[in-house]
Amino acid sequence: MAESNAASSPAAGSTPLQLHGGGSLRGRVRVPGDKSISHRALLFGAIAEGTTRIEGLLPAEDPLSTAACLRAMGVEVSAIRAGEAVSVQGVGLDGFQEPGDVLDCGNSGTTMRLMLGLLAGRVGRHFVLTGDSSLRGRPMRRVGAPLAKMSAVINGRKDGNFAPLAVLGQPLRGNRIHTPVASAQVKSAILLAALTAKGPTTVIEPVQSRDHSERMLRAFGAQLEVGGPGLTEVTLTPGSSLRGQPVVVPGDISSAAFWLVAAAITPGATLTVENVGLNPSRTGILEVLEQMGARLTVLNQRDVAGEPVGDLQVSHGPLQPFEIGAELIPRLVDEIPVLAVAACCAEGVSRVTGAEELRVKETDRLAVMARQLGAMGARIEEADDGMAITGVTALRGATVDSETDHRVAMSLAVAAGIASGTTTLHRAAAAAVSYPSFWDDLQRLRS
Ligand code: S3P
Image 1 (cartoon, rainbow, N blue to C red):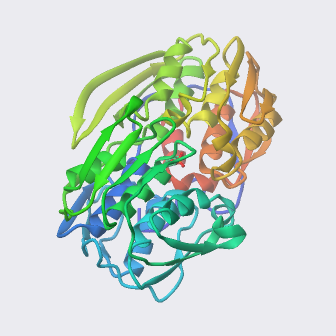
Image 2: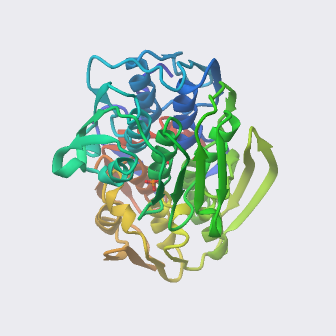
């Protein structure tokens, strides 16, 4: 793939996609690189000394947004193409040039939030960040407020909550910061700001969120300690410079989730998803599939460059309903839309609670899934902080819309596979945000 959207994808352009129900799924698939790890490899490589060589970087729109922002500040990032390693020439902790234009974060919340932490301490330099209409409607004060406790100056619409955001770099001071939401984006932004603050910074989360930043910052040479009940306290002590490293990005478990659910619910299906990242702060989906009695086996477990990895084999079988509560949400926050599809195939009521964070993702995923999957006949009762889904429901083909959300597009495609008749999916191209080859893989795996 060239460094743009996959023009040859069956979902390219604005023509809605026709998805036919029936048939099965069979074979092996390697999902593209983990999105969270890809962003971090680019960002940490940029502020390190020397070269960072990244294997398996996700060649999708979100990491391309991060790379474009870094290039606009003078960082050399080689072309991002599927199957090719990417190299980043680090400029050091304080080496970013002031960009001559607005930094465009596209659809990517991770780009904007981590970038805020990275730029807050670039003394005397001015940065403006914006994004697409979805990103401009997502809350940013959750990052701006803790950074302000470190003396950062970040302004934006609605008291700094919405982009466009202006950052005027300041000398920062370390602090002890409690975050109200378990968010790896918020935690990572604070840790990045802490790298050049005066004195140590401690972030305390209500529940541990994904820990890719902690693992990778340590590997790059940062001084970082993790502790507290349930690993909810992270302390970073500034003073060490970061050194460029080789990074190997495992497959994204959030992308694998579509195949895991598809195989579990499609009659006759068996799929093996290879090289999937199995970091324990991300494997909530596997626990839920186990709870449902899915036929799932983890094979060939290994450690790749500081992250656990394995192959996942899943086959169709009868499913029981699940219960997902607040404690589990951070470990499967991006997988709820596709789990809503799985719930339609389980006998009884599946429940998600404590998931109000879903309302501020790329779309309001509780409302969008209730609306779109509901159009296919799903019985979903939406609540403020979650939903209840009653199964078994025979889904039927319908005209549906991703509403621009990549994970909604792919979840609806999984639902279309078991629905009767044909589903017309509008704005299917949204999948390119995290998984540009999804439609090609779907075509290949269908039997
Ligand atoms: C991400 C963290 C999660 C997740 C997002 C990627 C990250 O968001 O939903 O897709 O890379 O840190 P929050 O940390 O805001 O929950």
